[in-house]
Length: 339
Image (cartoon, rainbow, N blue to C red; front, side, top):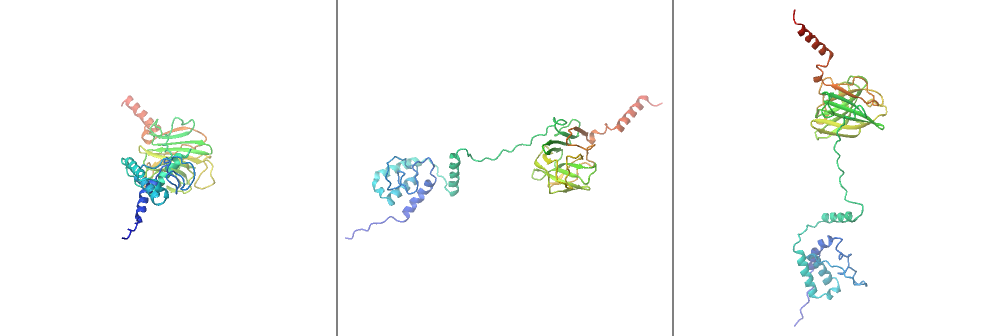
């Protein structure tokens, strides 16, 4: 009778065991002391190495680890013969007990890479995970400093401030720059022009424009007659702006001295200031709100801080000399009566 031929383990059996052991072995954490280098036996040292048999904790928290060690001992090493069937059975029982309540985790290269970065950053002293810098809110314009540490122009109701005036502008020196603050009751744009006269034309203009995306951008213009042409060379820096409560408010710095240019003036010289504001269409400025925008009565020096109030048209009716004279004449006529 012919002796039965011994069957070799099928080729798919080792592959199946490797697939079961792979994700767990790759996702092993640094706390797993038993996760040795590649080619090491169950006690964390290379097979065949001579040394002390220090007890090293084994992986026994999942079926994958048990299957991987079983494959390593049974097919890749002669040391597998040293383990009895009872030892493997006990380890399988422990793996079953420990793996019952766990939730299966989806394994992918992206997950493995993110876990690797987490381990590196959490164990590297002095290098925490980078976080986005906080966004500072727009600091409100202070009017208490007007006439003291900065110059201000207010146009609107008597006693108004940067949040209630129809138009507000402040300026102050900061090193080699001039800081401007502008605010107006509009949803489009607010601007200041530097002119050699009180008329529009040939003027250097800085405008804060509210676009359709909700941003407030500082732009540079040059008045060509009654038309404002945008200039790509923008001297503004450190600009910031906000649109709140139907008001456009901004803050920016501009150098005092600039190279000679037709469209940019030197602010160390005195200029008439032109004040204007109006609507915008898709981030482009349109004609200002009033036909005759206010201007400074005299040239303005950035080295002199004043707090100047200009009443708007609604508050100018009874303050003009002609109106006062007319009121006095009517009062006198009523008191004297008719002859």
